[in-house]
Length: 257
Image 1 (spheres, helix red, strand yellow):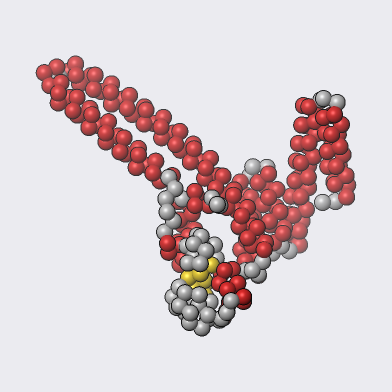
Image 2 (tube, helix red, strand yellow; image 1 turned 30 degrees about the vertical axis):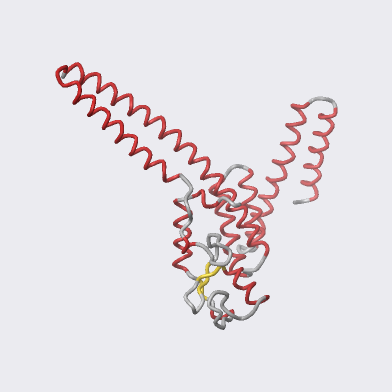
């Protein structure tokens, strides 16, 4: 951020402090909000300039992603964070920034899933109630039309309501957290893969974890104990795609413990 922009943001913050001390809480909130918004707006401008100069600027894409998320432009923000993640992972898979970017990505993707899941749940419940009313109204109509067959009509109505309940329960289960399949998780961390690599043994590990093992523990496969060297590790693209597909369908899996 330029010195002028920083001064303007700081002035808004000081104004907020002054208003707060005088008890003008509404004005204080407006000033604080202005300072934050102004700061992120300038961050976005600076990041876009940085990316124009270097399209592989990890920090440029990362900070631009955060700025867009602050403006609630979630799709655009996620896209920039994913760019930063891919660039940094390819350049330095053991960088602390890889983990930092992943944490931000996981947080926003879980938040988006949670919001959409809540909306879907409400819509399903409303639709279910509407369908149940329609089935009951049909039951009343059939009861009047077939007075001599009330038992059969009541049985049919109960079966329809039960079938309706099963259908909506099955649809709702798609948003319920379950166990993540073992083949999508690292055998060392037990967490879902982010950057899976496969060893000659056929076992797949999280790249950062296996590199740390080779550096600090020894040049061998932690499960089979067979000799293992860095140049023998190959990206497991099939598992990577499977993880991405699973996360797209089950956003709850982004939740960090």
